[in-house]
Length: 76
Image (cartoon, rainbow, N blue to C red):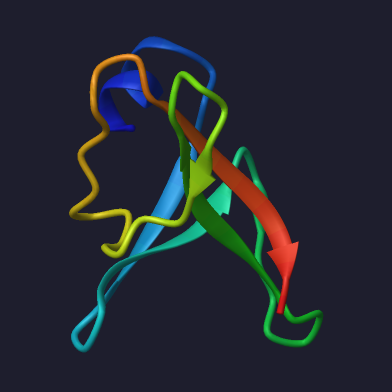
């Protein structure tokens, strides 16, 4: 994501949490809010269209080649 941020208009903000590691706070100026129960969800998609939620956070996830990374603004 940092490489993408350095080479395009894509922007993100990460907050370091000592219990959980890096936490994605905002993407392109849109931030999750506790009051609205919104957050950025990390998903990945295989070439066959199967989507899954990685079992690691944004700081540790390494996508496979040809895998699509999805940052989904969602509610809990």
